[in-house]
Image (tube, rainbow, N blue to C red; front, side, top):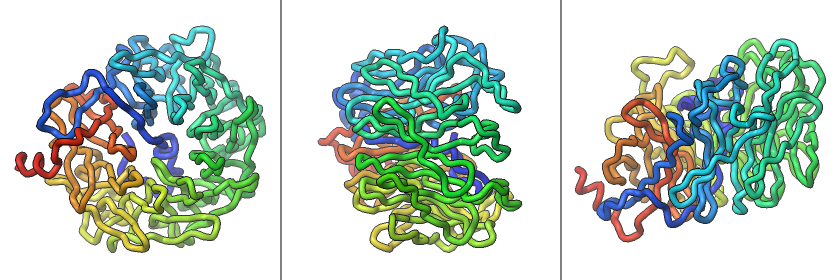
Length: 469
């Protein structure tokens, strides 16, 4: 799954593929009925295969609208293209498909190609209308020299029918986000050869917006490549773009800046002095055009979290350590992520700034340490709602162990807030304004499933935690 720390020398595609929208779920079936816990746990299950909610070793965003949940899961079909599977997909031995879950019944949304049962698809974003964006293999092999992938196409499921959004002249495209107006954004290849192709596609990768049945190239910041990862309901788009085509020896990639596309203009949001800055992992653009992420400092050896808008970019700082990153922002301008402390990490990762790191909440210029949960050394905050509730994951600094909720100055292990279950909740990635939480858990056999937690309004979280202690 996504590492807590994004390497300073690589593009942050882990979080870029994984922008979670608001969860709007009600009346779940197959939830724990224990009345003495503050949350009901809904395990979304699979399409017959071993795992759910996983793509490219990263939890795939799953969201819901009304009584339906949307996600991605393994089928029972062995993937005939596993050896050449596009890196956007899971890489496990099974075909995976996007699905809709409604009242306990899971329905396969299918994939592209003449034999869709043999091709994988993933859901990356869903809007309030229940339309879903993502990507699908199509059964063809990318002929671009040096690739050999099975071709992938950005797709939109509208009324549960799959629409191929096409490309910009190349053989690959991926949809990362859509808004309530069915505007879809992502990255698509054109036909121009490109030795520094952002996703290794062999040709230029360009940020796109798809609307009214047409795909539009959003341009770049001067270099050959760009990718769009978020769009809000005002039609503003956030992503990353190259400013040149020369790989930097410290980062391994051309100079990369975050951008905000607004009213047809791609604005360079700048950096904190380094040559690599990227938008955040989970929900990095709010409805006011504010963007969060991480930026290298001068020298490209360390990086800090940033907040940016059309007027500039600011450093949110750390807890004394050298590294930090911002993952999400709400509509009140509150930012969450992680930041390094001054305490050395044991054992070290062998990277710059091997210090323990903990989840933060930034509010009106103040960076607050949210701490971690009992037994875990490190933590990172992934999502925040407009009520200021924060969710994330904690662990031993080399991976996630426990999902957490932070509210009212307390950071709590979510496993303590649900009835005993074989699914251990390892990560929480989004929380909506009703307090419903989406994340990933692991079963005793090591398989991962996506879950949703539904709050029980009459059960006290504080009393549950006190009783557990």
